[in-house]
Length: 504
Image (tube, rainbow, N blue to C red; front, side):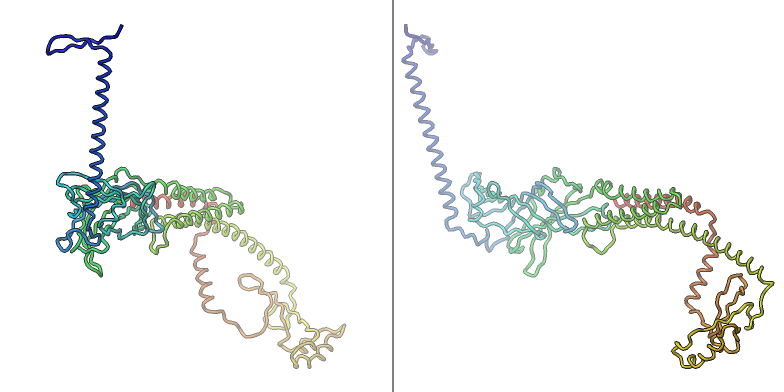
């Protein structure tokens, strides 16, 4: 039995029964109309593509790429806006920074108008080689490159009235002259300088769009924080004319966290480590000297690492002052032990000398009763030393006296002082000066005067030695050092913190 379909016709109010054959016929009719519609759409699309191709060919026909829009008339207005993609790096050594951004330029070229309606044609970047584009460049650029993955990152967008939007994505390294007086508590201003290379203000005038910069809030840097930015435009007078320059300035504040853990904290710990020697016994020479030298070398290593990340500039930076002060305190701790060691061993040497002098006085006093008469005036005990082998003397006068010497050196005969010339008589004196010290050998000859400079230095040293307080216990130096060194360091740290807060 054939399947029937009941369909109501509202107009006539009657019902008709259609068989499955009639339904099949309707489906075929619908497919036919759909095919006709698709064919019609394809026809319209092909016609439109053909029209666009003809339009592009028509606007490029007779187009002179060498002439700017409105040539010979008013200056062409070129709008600019930037979108910051990322801050890649900031180098203090090279005084530059690297940034990736999108640059969009807007101008109107009536030669490219193709419709009265608000139609927009988005074309590939290759189309930019067929039309006039501004010769824009970055005045403080060091190195730049256009991204080409997967295609060259450029676009051209044409409006029906001839308005052109020209965009590109690139990475550039720009110069940034930094002021490092307060490094690492400094803040820097890094700029982007945009200018036309060949067109003066009589031909091209650049200006910022209503929203000149985007993406600054999302950009992040490892060592800096972007506080804000500022845009301005000015005219630069050069040898070839006056040019319009657009400037974008970023305000960057350096983050101190990296330097706290890499420089400040290690330096503080090294200085405190040098104070440990004040609690070590002064007789432990090897321990205290090794500790002092180790801390000095460690501070030298830290200073070298900091200088390697900075340019070779002539002025003094804040971190230089800090590291020098840390080095001074570490070196002073080593010198403190030198003072302790000198005081301790110098006192012991003086005690030994005094004891020896007192023993010599006792020996001399015991022999004072049996002093022999001296052949030389002014001496208490003297012996004549006979000079042997005078024939070997280079002086003829001495060789002629050899007979006298040989006759006087006969065994069993006493030495006759009269036979020796006065110049060969050596008096060994056992007398003592007013201070009780042995004078040793005394010989005849011209009196030698000490140099005045050396005498003045010795006199000044003696006065200084008398004026300095005498330290009986060397441990007092260590006890005072335990208090004085931390106090001075803390005072300098508080002063540095106040100056840092003022700068920030």
